[in-house]
Image 1 (cartoon, one colour):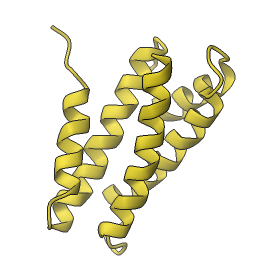
Image 2 (cartoon, one colour):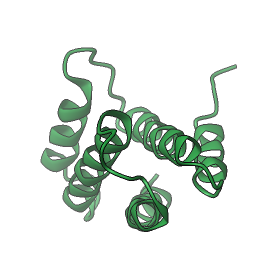
Image 3 (cartoon, one colour):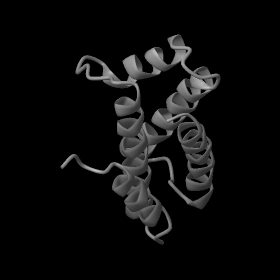
Length: 116
């Protein structure tokens, strides 16, 4: 049975609502990867070479539905926020950061749900 990437999204959202910064950082990362894998599967994407950028490019180039270009841009925004949460120890990942991330994530999920 294949892994259900919704579980990553759910875990990420739970972690983002916890009081500690380490939980919020982990939550941002899990949420991003849950969405990334759902989109990867949706478009039938399997590459291992620079997969995040390649998926964004594929979404931007395809025209299977109207919002693919927007979805590509949102995924890029989310990736940048995820990288900050994963790698920038000087940047606080506080509730404002998480809120900005979650709003973009909700936009992406809405596009995904309307077009899967």
